[in-house]
Length: 155
Image (cartoon, rainbow, N blue to C red; front, side):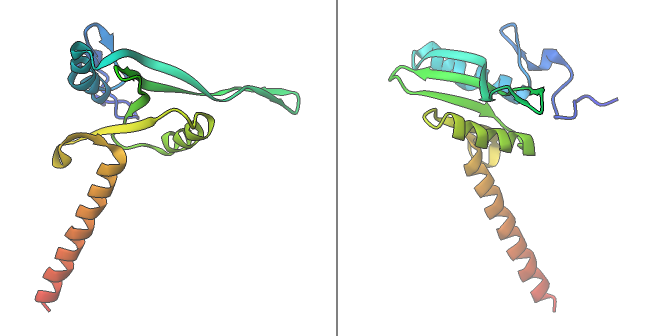
């Protein structure tokens, strides 16, 4: 029996619970606990909404059949003391659906800053996903380059 779902979510809700809130993932819970809560306590964040829903495409009728709306639920909606607002989603490894919904979100809500955040110990902790993705690709290229150099030395 697996300890995680198909989305790699810990099935033990206690491990992803903080302050009585059960989060969708341990990563989401840790970001809330380690980043957002201290910023709320300091007053840098004046409002934080968890699991904020957005409609990406409305319901419509096609061939006399109702097609359901496409919805997206953001991990966090945050308003800072300076008035800046943003939507934040925690990501480990986004799947094709997440990538598609991100594009749809950008199109439907172009005025809303939208960030994917992940945790990478190698890259300094909590970082923007795109930054970490680039760093991982760089490390992979360097590793391949070193492997090729090692093979050439043995020829």
